[in-house]
Amino acid sequence: MKMKEEKWLIGVDLGGTTIKLAFLDYYGEILNKWEIPTDKSEEGRHITVHIARAIDDKMAEMDITKDKFAGIGMGAPGFIEMETGFIYQAVNIGWLNFPLKDKLEIETGLPVIIDNDANIAALGEMWRGAGDGARDLLCVTLGTGVGGGIITNGTIIHGTNGMAGEIGHITSIPEGGAPCNCGKSGCLETVASATGIVRIALNSIESHKDSLLYARYKEHNELTARDIFETAQSKDKYAVEVVQNVTFHLGLAVGNLANSINPSKIVIGGGVSKAGEALLTPLKEQFEKFALPRVKEGADFAIATLGNDAGVIGGAWLVKTKLMK
Ligand code: ZN
Image (cartoon, rainbow, N blue to C red; front, top):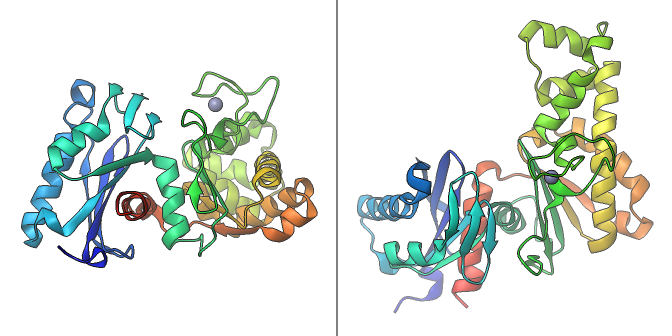
């Protein structure tokens, strides 16, 4: 019997196009990481076998055996029953009523724990990233969508049926907002995701033909969130206006959330967060209008630091804290 500190952990992060895998030591150091394509054929039924095979192949390559590992922590998109690791629905993958934990345990012979992909990314940032030891943490991921994770006293909040932390679907525009993937309209995701930011800029770009942003748009025949933040940094009036609009809604949502959970760290991640200070400075200004003085004093903003590794590191954290007790 090995000491528990000698055990390794496996993190798996399932996305719509790739599955990220990693072996980590007990302290969350990545020892080996790699990825395989997500095979969505036949309603995603081959995915667990592919994960098991990828893990077995890597063990053989590294000349190690299964008893080296304490278990697998995996993040998956969709609606999940946390205790049983049962996926009610994962539209991007094709799963409907899929017993993910059970299947992966049978295929790998290792204990498995499942959580939502945004939640494991938040746990990863708490453990080894921008969280920097904070135990009350609000994570907001601004990518093609808007995701979130709420951690209080070191534990991720799931709510009564796993829906806690769905920050992207906070209503930002109560009337006349753009339609959202969830079926509602005016969600924060329609405003503050990369897609949302670009949509807002394009809405009235034709009436800002003298702007730097318009010139960029005409030059590349398309617009990205990065174009918008970069031209805003160059003080382009229209780009600044778009950034103000976006950070107003984001700051309002984050301010309201902070008033409810009183976090010590607010971590902003995802592709849009690469804008760095061009995003953080106006966001903090807006946030400060809506957060209570003591809430504001307690909360530091930070840009996520782990990038694509956050998920596998958070998965390993689940193994360490939930499976190794
Ligand atoms: Zn929505």
